[in-house]
Image 1 (cartoon, rainbow, N blue to C red):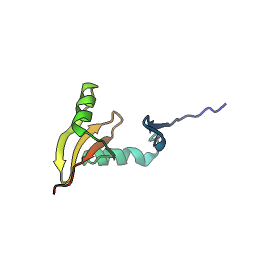
Image 2: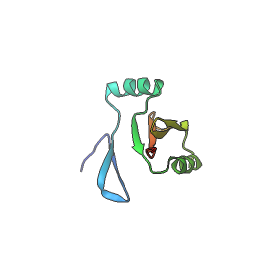
Image 3: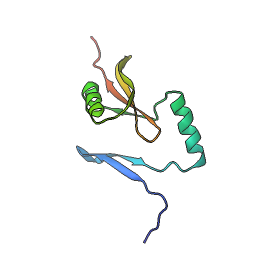
Image 4: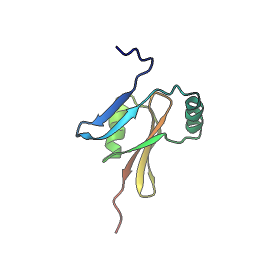
Length: 101
């Protein structure tokens, strides 16, 4: 029997269970806290996820109590929003915009 001090979690999309897998691991390395603090203080998202409809996802997550540090906004040829993940990270949601003719 494994008596692991730390555990990790992996996530997949229900629409593509054999697709991309996201691994969430503990941040126990001594450099992790300093890195997380510095990157968040500078307002930099730790990672970014593409969504099909940013407004709908923003409203859905707001209704679930998710805290956003940046409401949806245009940023060039994408629309972005930034949320706090509850673990000290900023996460960006991004929706590519159609190219104008």
